[in-house]
Length: 225
Ligand SMILES: [Zn+2]
Image (cartoon, rainbow, N blue to C red; front, side, top):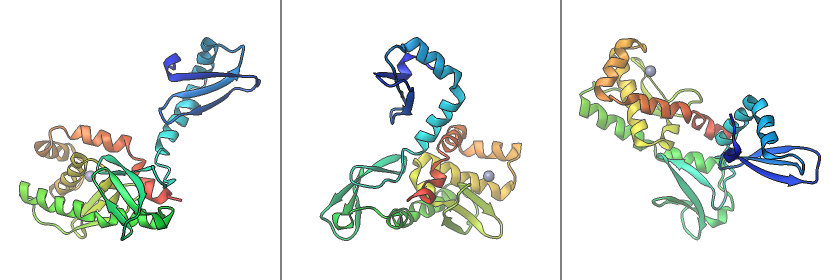
């Protein structure tokens, strides 16, 4: 149910009611002068499902990859702010910034992809580290862009990690890696699989939830215009 703190009501002289979802997640309503807040709330609540879907969609598009000066791209659970600057070569990563050669005018999809590809070592190295730390048998580790999975393990091919994981916080990356290692012993998501996993990561559910609510990151790179 919506209430007035979710809503920004703007009265106009139009008869039509218009709404849009703001970056803050609030709903901006443009309504005729005689329409007051209680009426707006009743109207929104009667279309709750449709509006909530819109809010979901909006948040998945926050990273619209309308990539320009001042916009952001996700990196290790944080947002890197894109700044165009007089630098060479093409791009530099600072703490919280991604500096782009200003001659580029615009960050191309290709460059964004290259940026993540370039950091694949973060995943591979970490997988090796965690394997050594926990004494998992060594496996072949490779990275790839997948649309619908964060990682996979097969006896034949080894461990695959989705490059989109570079966008996720470290604890989430660790979860996916250990999850895949646990598949060496338990190929399926059986009860014993989860018990085994919990021995390494008692709070794995938290990371699992993060992946679920950030599933749109999986498609991000494929949606760049
Ligand atoms: Zn699995």
